[in-house]
Length: 101
Image (cartoon, rainbow, N blue to C red):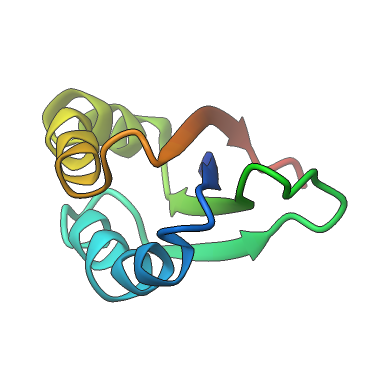
């Protein structure tokens, strides 16, 4: 199992709308690529929220090949959609992890 983790700091001015968009549109779009089975949204608790709220979204892929397919074929378009909608009101940091049993 591969976990594609996206940690996002969201400006307070867009936080409510951004979270709704994430839940109702963005995650659905990413899951519909067929590269991930599901996603989990987490709110980071001991983070400095003075400049915004910090979330982590973990997308679960059954293989590295499926994750690679997402990066190669879909990631640029998905990132552009977010930038077009929210501009510079958020920043994202991405990492890839493998589940260890």
